[in-house]
Amino acid sequence: MRRARSRRVQPVPEFDAALVAARPLTPYVRELTFERVDGEIVTFDAGQWVNIVIPSDQTDLKRSYSIASAPNDSSRFALAVTHVNGGPGSTFLHQLQEGEKVRVQGPQGLFTRRHLKFPGPTLFVATGTGLTPLRSMLLDELHKRETRPLWVLLGARTEADLLYRDELESLAGQHRNVQFIPTLSQANSAWHGHRGYVQVHVSKLWTELSQDARPHAFICGLQRMVSAVRDLLRKEMNVPREQVHSERYD
Ligand SMILES: Cc1cc2nc3c(=O)[nH]c(=O)nc-3n(C[C@H](O)[C@H](O)[C@H](O)COP(=O)(O)OP(=O)(O)OC[C@H]3O[C@@H](n4cnc5c(N)ncnc54)[C@H](O)[C@@H]3O)c2cc1C
Image 1: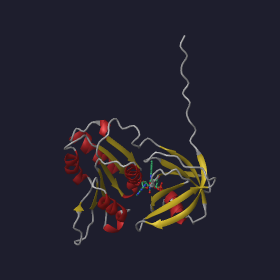
Image 2 (image 1 turned 45 degrees about the vertical axis):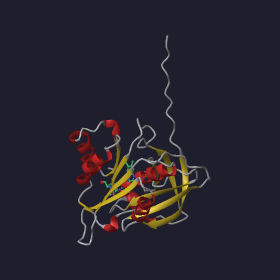
Image 3 (image 1 turned 90 degrees about the horizontal axis):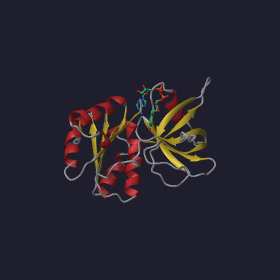
Image 4 (image 1 turned 60 degrees about the horizontal axis):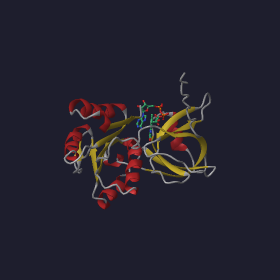
């Protein structure tokens, strides 16, 4: 008689981390760099997230944050957090002082490039801090000397809301395969770049990227944008499921 195979669920790692550096990326987004207190390496795949335990009077809350830095075999990792008005998690993280510690669960999550069925060019699509796991993937791919196209379509309301803009512009200048395409939904008249929501630009960029190979789309942000871009690619443009990867924050 065949015995049923027992499936062991790996426990999610937990550790304490201290805030070692923080800086504003935009008026509403704060980047926080943490370091494991025990000095162990934080091992993760680009695209994964951690839970931060938010102290509270009643039961502690947990909020998830994608890792914004690339895997680097160190005990440090960075998050980028949007301040949500009245939100306990993001308010706590915006007020956290250097040296203070948090409880971290993870890293975990399947929104990574580990199981891609085939290599290909990539269109990263994000709004706001949806960029964080995509930035980790982009930096990781460049560390690995990826030469296929890596295009970043980033939506924000105004120029001031474009996070990691200088870095992305600089990467696009240094690497022929990187393109940075910011688009603003509330641009002023001085803006000469793309306008409108990210959805408006996806099909043209996808068509360009599809000239020589089958691209992958990695989409991250709030549900409304993620669903709109997924539906556009999957239902209107008939892009197969294995090419469209997404993560929602709400
Ligand atoms: C897998 C995963 C990864 C995530 N990664 C990030 C990240 O890297 N950076 C980040 O800022 N948030 C991220 N989030 C969202 C985060 O977990 C919290 O939901 C967010 O910080 C709000 O928590 P809060 O306690 O402050 O507010 P709550 O009172 O819990 O308010 C929740 C409301 O905030 C809105 N909201 C959630 N996230 C955002 C956001 N990023 N921008 C604007 N509005 C938002 C939602 O619409 C929701 O209705 C992620 C969520 C998931 C599930």
